[in-house]
Image 1 (cartoon, helix red, strand yellow):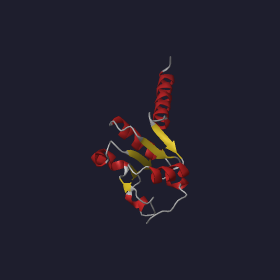
Image 2: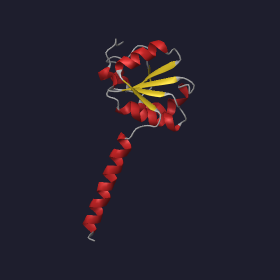
Image 3: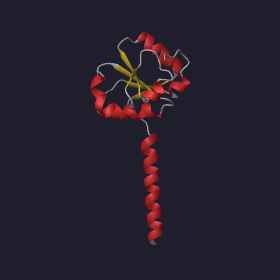
Image 4: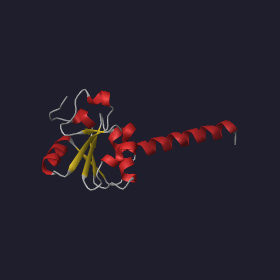
Length: 128
C-alpha cells in the first residue's frame, strides 16, 4: 500500500469519527420543541432553565427565568446546577445545548432536556 493512501484513509477516518461524535445523541437527553418547553416550564416548578450561550449573545434576549452558564464555563460552574432537578438547556440553534448535556450526563445528571432549534425556535416572550 502506498503511504499517501494510508494517510488519506487515516484522515478520512478521523473526520468521520469527529462528525459522528459531534452529532450522535446523548443518552437520556430529551428533545423538546418550543411549545413543549413552554408547557413543561409552567407545569414543572422543580426545574432549572440554562442558557448556554455566551454573555454577548444573551444580551440580545433570553427566555425569562433562564440562568446563563456559557458552555465555555460549564465545567467550572457545574456545582451551581442541582442534580435532583429537571434541567432544560438551550443555546442559539441546539448544538451547544447538546454538548452541554453531554458534559452534565457524564457528571451523573439524568433529567436533561434541550430546546430543539435553540432560541431561534422559541415562540414565547424574551427578556432583555
